[in-house]
Length: 179
Image (cartoon, rainbow, N blue to C red; front, side, top):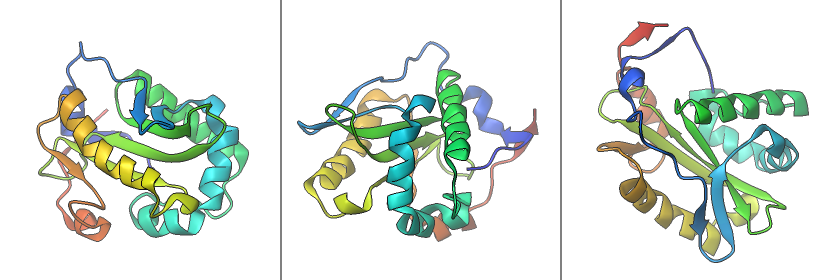
């Protein structure tokens, strides 16, 4: 995912200043979501590497992620950036864990909109071994319901679900403001 010196104009008013983001979200009986941290790097890196080809097919054209040979240091930097963005309420990356947090099994991204027509852009993935599983189905059912119940959003867009990534890329960009 990229960063730049300009941000979508809606960023400054994206979420209410007094809103608190969820810190633990059950996904079925054996899994949960929580905000990702830089200290998760040794769980995140194998999950990303193990599903890299499929993740590139999903996110590569839009985000240029994950790179072919992502190093631990690159992943650590990326996770530290995500952790800072979560703390600042700029964007959110929730990791899917087993109950004991011994494995990272996917991620949910909740971002301010880059394209017209939504007040958030949301996507998620699971590791290759969970594709088609009950855990993936539970996450697929949970995310829209969780967003509707716990997030102050009126028009979330589920990229890769409501529309394809190619359709999303074809949408007009929001005007930017210099930061």
